[in-house]
Amino acid sequence: MKFSKNHDFEAKAAFRNGTPYLIQYRSFVPSIISAFEMYVQSGQPDTPDSFRVFATHQTARYNAFLEKWTFGPSAPKESLLISYEMLTSESKIKVLTDIIAFFAPDHAIDDARLLKITMSVQKLLVEAKKTTTHIDFGIRATRVVEEFRFFDEEIFNELRSLTSESEILANLIVHQGFQKGNCPSKRDFLLSGAARLTRFNPLRTRINP
Image (cartoon, rainbow, N blue to C red; front, side, top):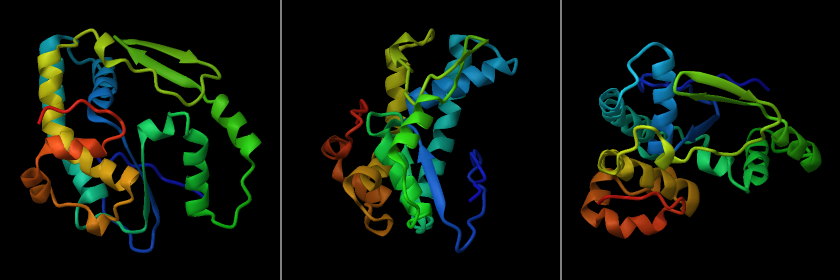
């Protein structure tokens, strides 16, 4: 089995009928820091103002991606949705097992081999225009948002407020067993109040309702 990868930054990729999809998303704040590091590495300014403008601009793209691929009415039905946080958690083996079972239900899974593979994964760390490679790093998250060189609590709370609704709706599908067709619409979500729905978010994302 072969996979093709598409970030679909512009939310313009077409769905192919009869094609199963593995859809991965990540909490916006840590993901935008990683994206900014790549942005800076490409020669763009590495300043607090540059980060603020870049990150704010990306919030609309993030919301469009999640609506298209996760909770929107046209999201592909034949798909498996996982979060980056799930894939890098202590439950990573179960997540990978679920992925294999989704695409190859008759395949016998070798848990020992799967564990060995996860422990041998290399990590490419890009930070402040510096790139380092870590051998046998494994599948785990290392991003500490508060340690980012341009961390500003007011700005980061604003970024969360611009993306939290979409993120929680995606989390409803992943962690609470909501089917895509039964997930609350964004309008219903807004009417219900973000404060009430944050209890569905097991990733403990800080929300500014």
